[in-house]
Length: 351
Length: 176
Image 1 (tube, rainbow over the protein chains, first blue to last red):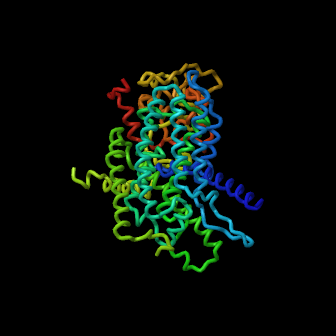
Image 2: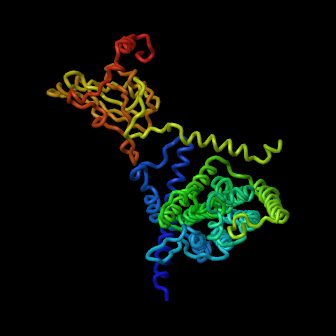
């Protein structure tokens, strides 16, 4: 029994959970600040220094609120909905490589909880199950608005998952592996996948917005039309779970985008500095978080710039624009590798 | 639409730069309790019932302010000055109760204009926020200015020579 490994993995798992929760918590604060700044306001600045205690105050408020379960609602499913949303959102972080390996006392510790050889598929599976949280919650509320919201969520997710999966197929053609760790390793230096798959990146980014139900694709929960959509009937911390799950999803999506297309924990010119391996690993993780924060900012930036799509526009974009573009991307990538007989560009052994 | 317009991306990027410009712009907000916006010199805010130089209340409870008030926010009950109270009230009749309902008041300043005794003025102070309605009915305890000369409320900006002259002219409607 390798006890040290088990203990290390457990501790690392807890750290990642905590980091995910803290980042999601402060994303709510960041969201409000970014919104305020873009509208020439100041945002929350009363609770603590620069309003930094605002998320805690919000959390306490959520816990203190009266908890209402409608009499006509299905109690079991009503509670199951936010639980699924939260759980699946938290589970995705397991396969993401948060950094390279750290060497302590001659032992190598990977900064990734589980290096699955089907890492991307795992992420997709978790995201797909996440939809059930929204669907079940919306259906169990026994409310027309909630039902409309969950129907929208379901059809939107299905539509955009196709284009998203296809953009990933093209990416896998270039990488030749499904393991997230290997994909990151291949992007060492400046061989970021975004330069090899610009169209794929664009499609993936748009689909990531749709998958996380963020504006301009927040049709399942649009406040003005559906009064909150699937979480119309929710209150107290169950509502908090839904909102929180959205921010966790945003964090994880940013991490996935950074991993797949922006080199993960790789940073150009880090090898030339001549630092020790452990320092490089820690710096890499730091840069990875910077990339993630950049993408979270992009998510917020877009939300406060663009208005919401109309539903037919959403479907048009998903089926008539993104899907053909994704298929074209696969064909173009495949044709390129077929005719040039150029082996996977990022795989060092083949070059 | 042309092709460039149809793919929306250039327009989206343009829009994003507009929001980014606002991101770094100077904020219009004023952090209120710490900072206050500059008031106009003749701002009409919370009322004050003035005392004269000897510390006596100027108000004689004639009721002209209550008549002039378009929102009917002023209520008063008059009383007669007893011997020995000359140091408290300037006139023989005074207001025993004088209440202004700040929720009804529209801060038009008609009471001030109607007052023949130069007793009521609107100042640049703000009516404080409350949790309930009743505290918004201000009685004499909160309307009459303090006796202490240093704590008197300065209304010299509003009580100018021109205003006094204007008020003495009987031809104007408010003094009919």
